[in-house]
Length: 182
Image 1 (cartoon, one colour):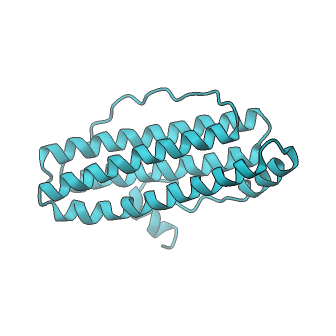
Image 2 (cartoon, helix red, strand yellow):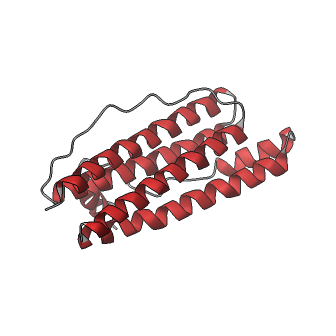
Image 3 (spheres, helix red, strand yellow):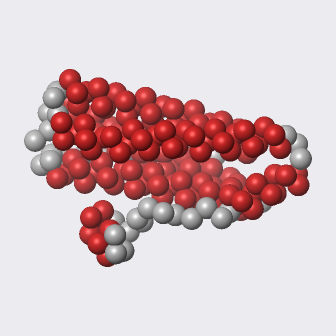
């Protein structure tokens, strides 16, 4: 059983992860609109990852016998100045999520909630990867500058990113993993 404050904080994190998915879907739509299909693909893969993150939290709260309370998801921005602008905003958002995950971990530690601490370790490590990926792409975009040929090369590279997380949650995460052979 989760402490009431922990349950509330985990529910808030579900909303943050859902917003992340919504944000990356908006970035995918914008990328497609300006002709950067590879960027659109990268952001859509990111959308799926964020939905996976939300569902892991959702199922954890339920497995702990607590109620999932879903709130409205805020409207994300839909216009961006450039690919660099999108990734700068992506990094800032992921840093916000990292701070939120760290606060969840601190709460779990303060409540001596060892199960939630262990559960959250995956998210802590995931955020290191998220920020590293964003920093790498930002560095490439800064090197590219205004070179359209280099931008198209990066677009092609980002178009090769594939979804590696489960996307069908109808049987839950564990059920989907079993069905996928993992």
